[in-house]
View 1 (cartoon, one colour):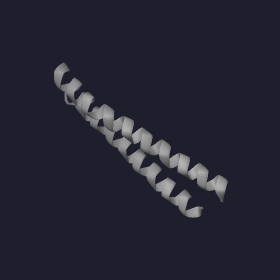
View 2: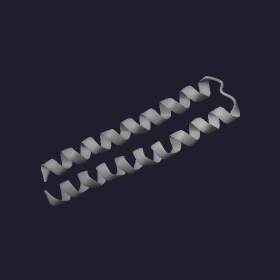
View 3: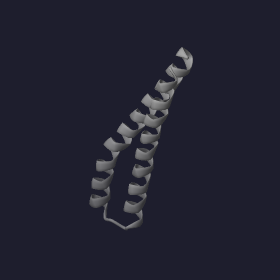
View 4: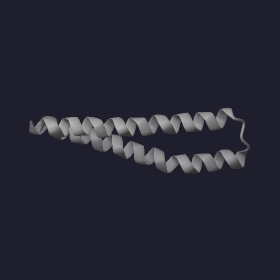
Length: 71
């Protein structure tokens, strides 16, 4: 089950990278001084990616826990 732990860690890191991308994207949009409409459009594009990244991180952590418990 050691393989499951490593795969889970990798999946969790992918999710973390996605979360960092979301943070950087929103931060750049806020700093660029966009008007309300453009900022709202950027946020609407980032929210599904943020949710997906959170799901990916959660799935990876579950895989790690299951791998540890079964190992």
